[in-house]
Amino acid sequence: MATGAGGGGELKLLGTWASPFVQRVRLALNLKGLAYEFIEEEIGGGKSELLLASNPVHKKVPVLLHRGNPICESQVIVQYLDDAFPGAGGDLLPSDPYARAVARFWAAYIDAEFFAPWNRSFYTASEGEKAAEMGKAMAALATIEGAFAAEMSKGKGFFSGEDRPGFVDVVLGGFVGSMRAYGAAVGVEVLDAGRTPLLVAWAERVAALDAARGVIPDVERVVELSRSVAKKK
Ligand SMILES: N[C@@H](CCC(=O)N[C@@H](CS)C(=O)NCC(=O)O)C(=O)O
Figure (cartoon, protein in one colour):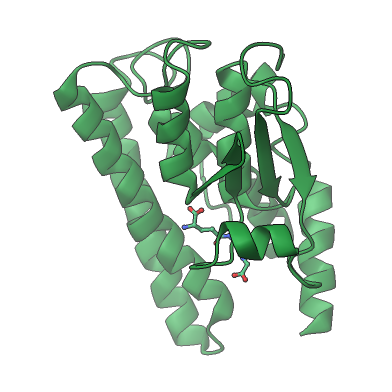
């Protein structure tokens, strides 16, 4: 798949297989047909000198190195790929400025209003706060489902409004593995056929993409990782 531009060591990605933000970037690279070297970081164990030097502000993955230049923050990286490799495998953002703004709005919404409370729900000890944060994340997903139906998909299978995924698909697509694993581990489905039927079907389509092979992890692998992390706490 990754045979096009970007080969010859031009693109390197620092990441971990389990990170949804890294998966987001890998989906984008694969959809654009860009070859890259994946450098697995040991986030739990000591971060590499290369990661610390490449992302001294946040010290987080993913970091894309393009001819040695570091680009940080997954949404920034995905947009950079369109800028640096226009047309390669099809652009992820639409060309129309208004449609681009709409896509960026929903991508920002996904991280701020869905991921952030969902993530906080893992780290709060209080059961009441956990439920409140989970409620906020679920409400955001219902809003995202509404946007998919009303203004984005245009009756097609993806947020891009086309038969192939675009920017918002990649941004939410990075969470598909974690959402599925959460259902298996906790017994509460994040994407639920009753509440968000369109997103359930959308997630199936994303997981079935060639670009997702080897990127969106198996449920068992994520569940096993979360159990081993929980044991160490
Ligand atoms: N906003 C960042 C989030 C990246 C992020 O949270 N990365 C996590 C892995 S999922 C990380 O590197 N954590 C290590 C740490 O916090 O020290 C993005 O979109 O790239």
